[in-house]
Image (cartoon, rainbow, N blue to C red):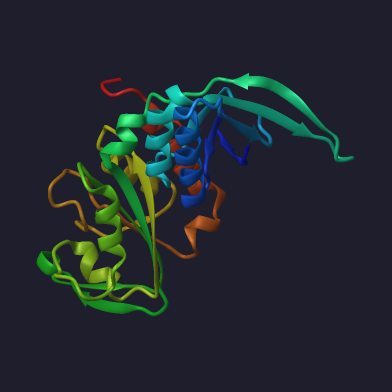
Length: 251
């Protein structure tokens, strides 16, 4: 049994963070199934009464891909629950549909992403072809994409030293006090959509940053406070992860 607490926009997603333990459990159950045991995986969705359950291809693509590949050997079920103030729990739906149609996408390691950076002090940085740019102190969100090697691309951006300076974001990342990557697995390139959404959210665009190969004014946006603590930013992230990215390729 696995507890699922991440429910947004009618979609329940598990796990809410990478879980090597959950991946190992799938492998162990699949091995028992090959020995003749009947093996079950029960996802207990704690709230929200979602319309569908999806393995988390954004933050744990290994688990999502494994669940899709091993599903024929397992009995999978998702159940939605509701807890009253007195602690009593009731079953809202004993069979929430499970969508495993994104297994290939999870395994492809492609999609778009945002990188959230914190600059504790104002700095002026030589930024490659853009020349010297003055960055006020604050938080910055960069939108990008990778047709392959999404996880490696994000990991590279998070390195603040020991790498060749190639993209505009490389020059800024080495000045940041902290950096966090937010993956959005998808068949479509969503980086320009993400940039437009960040601008609508009130982000201050840095002209030309990260957008030299497209028509966008910018792919980097500044915020006065940590956007991850803003519900509007979280809604943006949930929209892309729980809805936009799950649209079928070509739709």
